[in-house]
Structure formats: structure tokens, C-alpha cells
Length: 388
Ligand SMILES: [Zn+2]
Image (tube, rainbow, N blue to C red; front, side, top):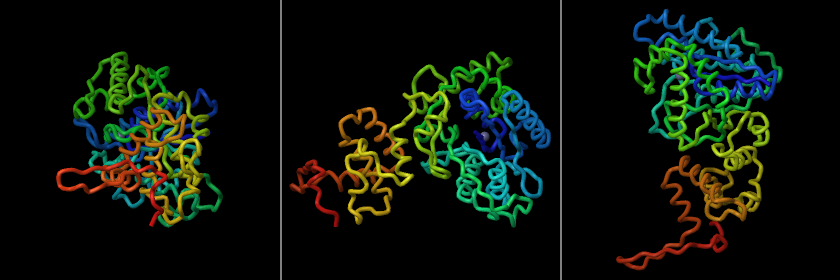
């Protein structure tokens, strides 16, 4: 199996997915990993020049790659130059270079940062640009010649190139963000991951404590850093509402590339922690993306029975209604925990007004009983009049 991790900066891998890869390799011997860094690493030090910063960051990542057993690549444009931090989205050669590299490496799984669902969330512009770029080129991965005018040395041969499953990593800049689909228990390899991160000493011991963005202290020895690493990871999980002693790495599954099945993910991902993963909501989403009818055991009314004129596009209104059905009237065996997960998902993904409107439209009949009082009754689903 081949994994590709695409991110903006030197050290992003170690802070989001290194434990998962280490466990993946142990569970599936022969798994290969490529780490692709999309910026030049020249910005982000208070005492070094741009050139000195870039050179040091490159050396540090090369050391981590050697210790971590992965290949590391610095993305370059068709002109052979890397892309500047804070300028990715204004760099015309960025998408062609990324497209070419994904085609060249042909991964089964591609990991990259997420796009915030909440417009009020803060972002790191480089992380956001990488996320948007991966999403943008994903459909073109198997389209030969898509970018050969901009990247003439690309392999534009019309051979079939598989489109990977694309997974979003945790992003600290989005704070709590969306609740994760999958949580990997990396506790057994937490020290190993901390040691890989420790290779980035110009960040851990110099820049990050100085810039004071992540509440990081400068440790003088690796033992102190290992303890701090566990504290940072615990704080991250607390922000996601996940309690426990384990060190977890968390992921969301996208439909940007090939849509996997839940069975496939559970077979391929190592050490999934069932209490922090949300298999039921993820499974429902994957089935929806695949165009399969929702499992009868999960949703009371199958898609096939939805009148064609109700919401033929399967748009937001349809999604909200189906999830509300799971919360309010899921069949026997659909546990309170599962209902709570669906509800949390719904609230995190859609606006309050949309959800309230759906509830009123679908389940509540309102009576106007005069200026002093109002009343409503719950409308049994079966009594809903036929759609107009
Ligand atoms: Zn970063």
C-alpha cells in the first residue's frame, strides 16, 4: 500500500499523522510513505535569514524522514523552484506541480489538511491553500494532459492512474473544528512520534516558543519534550471533547477522491479507537456519497421511497431531514449514543435556522391561538401531507 502525506510545512507531518503511519506500517508490512512539503520553509524564524531558515528546515525534515522511514519531497514548480510560504494560492504553477506529483507517486491514500466548514474559524493560509489545491486537483488526477501546458515535463501519458482516498488530518489552526470520523490510538508509539518532531529543533526549541502560538515551552532535552508532546496532544483531544489517557491522531474522510467503504477503512487503518471514532455516522455518509440507499437498519425510510419531487437532488434539505429522522425516530437498536452522534454532526455542519426550519416543516404543526398563547403539537411523520 502507498500513502502520501501532502502538507504546507516542515513538521506538519509529525504533528498530525506520524503515529498512524508507524502503526500502519507495522500492521501492513511493506506500506510505503511519501511526505510532500509544499512550501520552501524560508519564513518562520526570528533570528535566521530566509536562506538559513530554509536550509535548516530542509535538513531537519531529512533527519526526521530517515528516522521515521519515509521518503520526503519538497514540491517544486516546472521551473524547478519551490513555492513561497504565504504565496501558494497566488503561485500559478502550484496546481500543475501538485497534480504531477500525485500522478507520479500514485498513492492509495492521500492525507492533507482540511477546509474549515465554519467561516468564523481562523486559518493558516498555507494549510488552507494546500487543502484547497488538493481538493481542486483531485478530480483531475486521472486526466492526462490536464496541466501539461504549464508543466511540460509532466507524464501526460493517457495511462490509468488510480485516484486515492483523500483523508483530512487534524488542523490546530481550526481549533476544535469538526468532530473526527476516525481516531487512531498512537499511545504505543507516542515517544517515537515525539522523537521525530524533536528533529525540528529550529521550530520546537526556537521559533514556536518565541512566536507563542501554540503555548509551547522550549525544552532542553528530549525527555522533557516527550512529556510536553503528550500534554499538547491531550489538550487537542480535550478541545474535541474526547477524554481519556490515550494519545490519539484524528481524521475526517472526504469525497474529494475515491469514496471508500467503511469496511475498507476499518481494515486499512491501524489501531482505531472505537469510542472516539464515529463509525455509524461515517458509514451513513459514505453510503450517501456512493449513491447507495441508506441502510434500512439505520434510517426508517429508504431513499427509494422518497417521492421524486421532494428533493431529487439529495441536497442539504434532504440530508438534514434524513439525519433528523435518525435522531427523532431511529429504529430499535439505534442507540442513544448513535442518535447523539448524528445530532452533533448535524449541528456542526448546518445552520441553526436550517435545522429549525426542517423540524417545523417536517414534524411540527403550529396553531395560532391568539396573542397571549401559542401552541404546537408534534406531527406524526405518517400524517404529513403529501409534498406539494
Ligand atoms: Zn504548518
